[in-house]
Length: 148
Image (cartoon, rainbow, N blue to C red):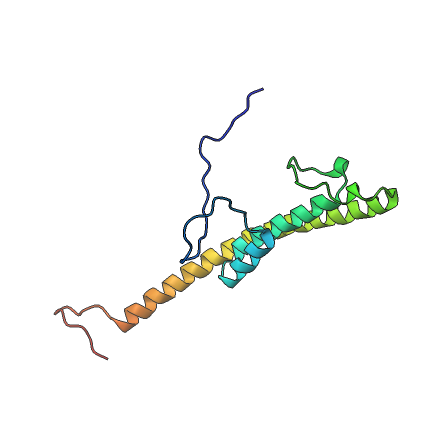
């Protein structure tokens, strides 16, 4: 078996303008906070990505070990650590499955939102070109610009 280790790991750290330097220990911003910040910043695709991540994590915490399809290793075991009632675990597993399905549907919607954003950006740019052309018409044959 061959193990591949990254040679370089890149990351970005947001530091306050008056900070004395970059902290030696950085902690990633949780998905919920990333979603809120992205929505506030007008970045719905980034927010939806974070929400999909959060829903997937929630689903994994409710699913039983043998029902998870994920290869990801979580830092927690989820509810199965504290509950040994088979009926309750089954019900939690079903809800975890529903959350995972919701995450998949949300990821698909995110792709549609990305397409919408592209069209909206192109439309805005085209409208701006038309507005500028109307505001600053090209010169006539003699090189004079029409006045309004």
